[in-house]
Amino acid sequence: MTLGEGFVQQGNILSNLPASLPDEIIEILAESVNVRIERIISKGQVTPEGEWYDQERDEWVLLLSGGAGVLIEGENSPRVMNQGDYLMIPAHCRHRVAWTDAKEKTVWLAVHFGAQ
Image 1 (cartoon, rainbow, N blue to C red):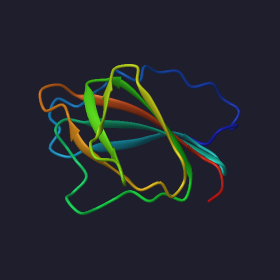
Image 2 (image 1 turned 60 degrees about the vertical axis):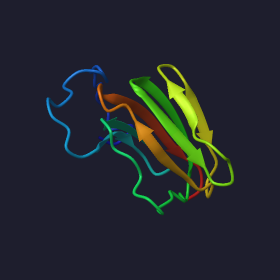
Image 3 (image 1 turned 120 degrees about the horizontal axis):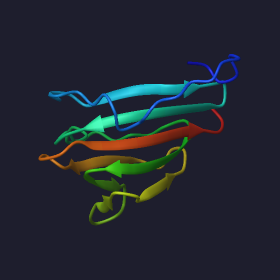
């Protein structure tokens, strides 16, 4: 969906979660030239060892359910995230998902914005 298409869309970000989750799922909920909003669903998935996210845009991420640990490059241990916690990650701040809850689904709301 593109922002500003002239229609109203309604939904529930915690509904329609898949029964099984062999891979992390990233769904684009809305997107424009300057902003992308995603729902990310994880269950035990992590960033592969040795890999880092190094994004062109700022990212604001909110944990809606579950739990996770996000490691910022240069920090000694992951930042623990629980329901309601958020991170503002500046563009080119290298980070990785160290762990997500393996027993329940972790649902994230990610907003990417800024220069690309």
